[in-house]
Image (cartoon, rainbow, N blue to C red; front, top):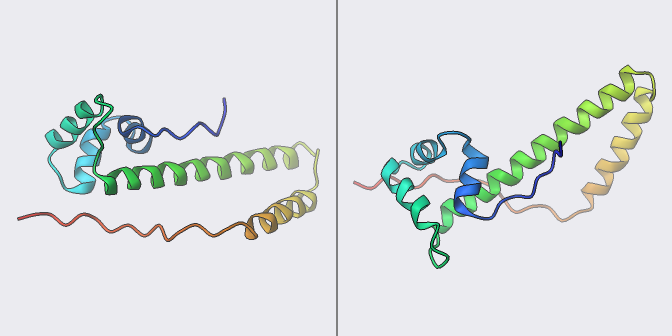
Length: 123
């Protein structure tokens, strides 16, 4: 099983990946909109010319990327623990490799601020 799956770009796929089962209701609750509105968006997503609200799509993409990072971190930790527990690698060797990897990432461009501000409820 691959830890890294391609991040979906479509509204329905992102909604399912981020919120799981019952994603329409969870997305509606998160953004403070009616569940029927999200159901309508999901139905409209079948039309190639339709675009979901940009803020919601951006939020879903951001969350999907963050979940991908968390899954990768968990998997790296599992692999390192297995190698140490089996006696194949010394903990100091694993720490050195991970430090080198972290140093390589530090030189990468920093991501934009991912602060999220919920949509204010109308009314």
